[in-house]
Length: 190
Ligand SMILES: CC(C)(COP(=O)(O)OP(=O)(O)OC[C@H]1O[C@@H](n2cnc3c(N)ncnc32)[C@H](O)[C@@H]1OP(=O)(O)O)[C@@H](O)C(=O)NCCC(=O)NCCS
Image (cartoon, rainbow, N blue to C red; front, side, top):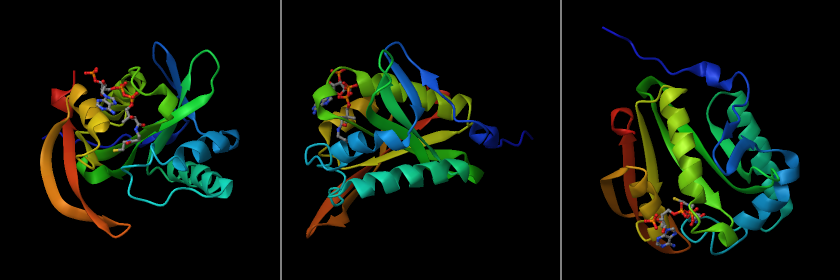
């Protein structure tokens, strides 16, 4: 019997990833402005079901929390940047990792001026590949509001399949919304 194991060595050193147009690097303190911009933007956050950021200190705290998550070997969130200037335009990562079950969850967001150019497809392809090939995950999950059509399309393009649908499962701001649970298995990943 082969016993599969999560590869904790992915946390030894922050793994920088590169694609044709992008560099995915560690999120650093000077990224607070762009994180604040995105997390305080009503359109970007429309389907997140949480309060918009009101103060830059919330972005600074997020950066600290992301660093702690990495140091404690719980998850990795990359700053998605254009290769030519290394300026952050969004982020993506794998978190809520269940090491015993070799399963993780992806999350992502991009500044709205860059939507529709295939950027997140390019970034997530690399992140998913990292999850399967380096972390040794067996499956990757995504949870989202089914009305988030851009995100649904993005996941389907990457080969994710909707495996669950939970009606009125998320409560925020006096309103219940549905949740779609998507997943991709290592063996089905190109
Ligand atoms: C979802 C999001 C990350 C997509 O990023 P992106 O870089 O614009 O995505 P891509 O350009 O790679 O597009 C992927 C596919 O989705 C489609 N798509 C993107 N946005 C869309 C939209 N609003 N409506 C319908 N389709 C959309 C694209 O056309 C493309 O499909 P195609 O190749 O068949 O044309 C971006 O819209 C975003 O940051 N949204 C706000 C944050 C968010 O909702 N995050 C996800 C939480 S679960």
